[in-house]
Image (cartoon, rainbow, N blue to C red; front, top):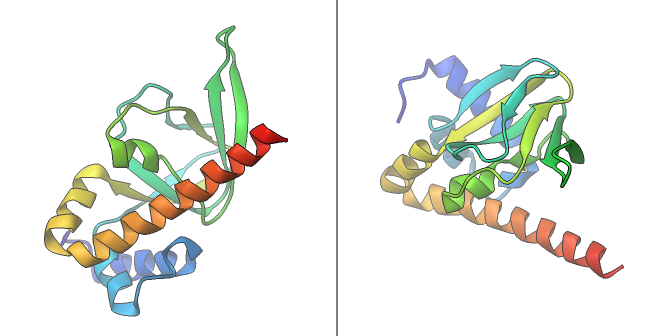
Length: 155
């Protein structure tokens, strides 16, 4: 587990508990998982990552909103979604090791929880049951989004 001061670890734990994504975790599991996450503040307008970048981390929005953008055929950035509090993003690249499929920019000042691919690997080694619950939560979230997009494509 990382050597974060306990007050920071507790703050991250509280943020994770506040995120509906991880409802399956038990209180002690939130405390253990918190040691693998970091907290970042991003100013409005700053890029979090760009389409095509290597996917070395994922984020969960604690405060603020994030604009998801893709390049269109003319090379222009087009906003495809705005993500708000509690939403994970960047998890596809962390899970599959592929490059970023879109760019993410802070649409407002943001406070984010970050989980690096290396931290997820470390969690899998050290606390595999907790890591499995987190990966299952991310997979479920991705699955719901894919089903929603499938529905939109049909209508």
